[in-house]
Image (cartoon, rainbow, N blue to C red; front, side, top):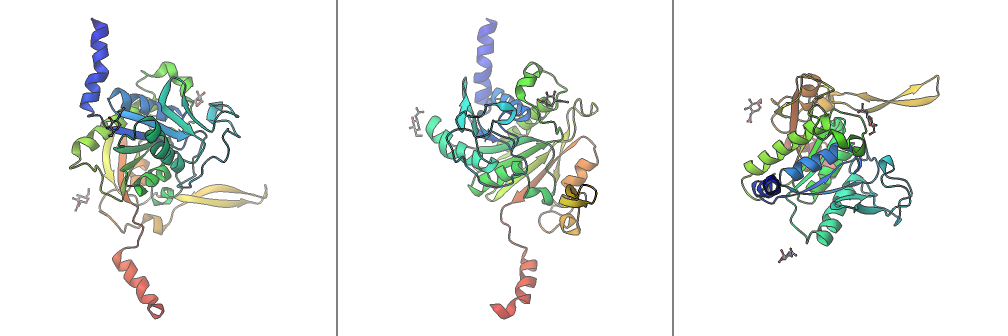
Length: 324
Ligand SMILES: *[C@@H]1O[C@H](CO)[C@@H](O)[C@H](O)[C@H]1NC(C)=O
Ligand SMILES: *[C@@H]1O[C@H](CO)[C@@H](O)[C@H](O)[C@H]1NC(C)=O
Ligand SMILES: *[C@@H]1O[C@H](CO)[C@@H](O)[C@H](O)[C@H]1NC(C)=O
């Protein structure tokens, strides 16, 4: 009797999620705790989730497109999963919906769309590409071009897919197998984020006016605050619609250390990163929202049309007038 009821749960969930297909990727690698928790919760919610993510840790690889030049791994996957010498792409032995690919995040998304789905899933239509949750935040214009999570996302948007980049404040690079007994731990950040991802994706599909859930050229950047064991006062953060620009935005910098004779990485803010040009400049900046540590999750929309604004174009065009 109970067995029969439990057997119905995935069927009911699938009806609720309306058979939507999600391609899931990241930059921390397919064996990262956060992405596996998201895979589990989205699948339990009834989505048809296909995970296609880098074999190795590819944080900071931005939108770079790199594919394997060998049929076997020259370096082990993250957490030695899979070990060096394994095929350069493959899936979990007991699950052909969970794939790794020895490439950058953007290439792992393309591998899912161009190889896995046509060859293993009858070219089923992908409704949404989700990347993350990343281990560590990706905030502001200064991180947009650097982050592998966002790089994977704009690679999806370039291909007409609605894409969302999701990042968590839990920076620890964790192997999912180390946490297999913690799937019901409601204070584990990966579990909290995974449930919030389902809530977000549910609303995105529910709120969509037509087949295309985000306008063409656009994607979303989401950043979760510290939760659970990292901040026990925050278990269910609220959503806030934010902008990319604004104070506390930073980008990478370096400092020369005279003693070591080497450079050290650091970060830097600037007026260019704080200035709002596009969108609703009254919105709070995502970097500011997370800096406030008020148990809030930022949701910012971006566009891959990188042109300057009309006013900016006119100023530049005027200065170059003699050339045209
Ligand atoms: C594969 O997709 C085609 C076109 O959508 C469909 O006609 C066919 O029934 C599908 N095959 C399977 C095995 O699902
Ligand atoms: C960080 O990740 C490693 C690898 O999975 C794990 O062994 C360790 O317990 C984690 N540490 C914390 C504080 O979560
Ligand atoms: C811009 O954002 C502010 C702050 O959230 C909001 O009050 C206002 O309605 C927004 N304006 C538009 C045109 O969306």
